[in-house]
Image 1 (cartoon, rainbow, N blue to C red):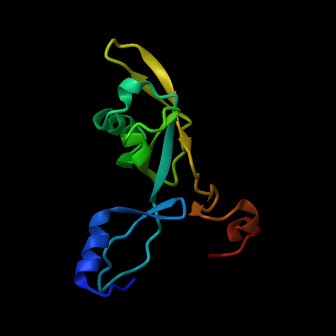
Image 2: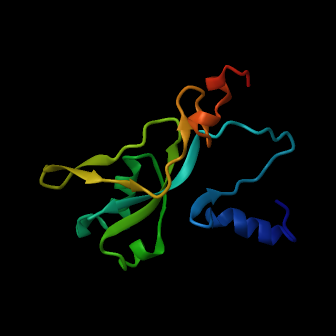
Length: 147
């Protein structure tokens, strides 16, 4: 990606998470010896449905999201508490690990409960070849082809 000025480039890099449609992505600077690497982590929108209002603060949401992996940011509606049905955050998740459907939360009284987590988009991973973004029926390893 090329920018018309250094200021524009710096603004884009400092903004952190961007969106293409509803898909979050992060832009990082490239280097002269840039090589394409296998993607191991991706930012994913995570919803915490029916989350107790006491966990809607930034610190609590960050702690909940860190149970999944690396929290990046909460969405505007969550921070302004406009949506009371669920809280939404972006979490950087490893794509080759199983994506959980809940996390275990213990409150200040030591009561343990499950908090459901919903993902807006789960990456397609085929277990045999450990590749991101294609279905089993389109995998060369399944057909016996070399990469």
